[in-house]
Length: 248
Ligand code: NAD
Image (cartoon, rainbow, N blue to C red; front, side, top):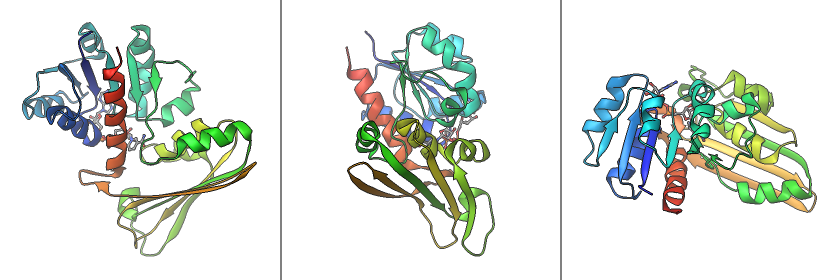
């Protein structure tokens, strides 16, 4: 099968993925690009040496029979395109993970893939979930700029359940959604802190489970074009794309 990859959303993450294809980090025969702002896809396509087709719709993308489509657009895009893509038996990598929490989609569908995104450790956390998690807390600390705020001092912007955080901060809290899906049905508590003293996007995860405790800490550089997004999110998608395209 030809290794064709489709990218929905040619912004910060979509561009990093397309460049990874161009730099042969991902082995891919044909690249399909779609953005609701056609010029963004066109501009990205023109900047690449790889064989690229810029399409005008998801329907057009599907006619090229891609093996994998990666969504790097918005929660709305996931809601609009998910069923159509899955009905054509195409692997779908979802970055706007909050949409899945919202849709209550059956994420057990083996063609839906959720990259680890801006964090890691999900393997250990999922394993602990099977035995039983007593408490899981995510503290996300970002510069006020990344949260669209102008705080001069540290401020707790939100404290509460992941499901609500995802709705209130759709562009900022994919990590909460990814964790919430991994440890479901355990309740995940989320704290979002606006901190003028940090330049990086910091995610700290504390888990108390039946046989021990875990503590993970990630300090990610924000993407220069979109400070809400951590570069690691794009690279986690690239890692997953490589694996899925390599499968026969
Ligand atoms: P971005 O704003 O830089 O780019 C998004 C692009 O998608 C834009 O060019 C926009 O025009 C396009 N777009 C939006 N809705 C669309 C639609 N319905 N159809 C087609 N194109 C559409 O955003 P980004 O930083 O690249 O992030 C992309 C997505 O990934 C966001 O939803 C973001 O919240 C999410 N994200 C996930 C993680 C994670 O850990 N899973 C981390 C960071 C960002």
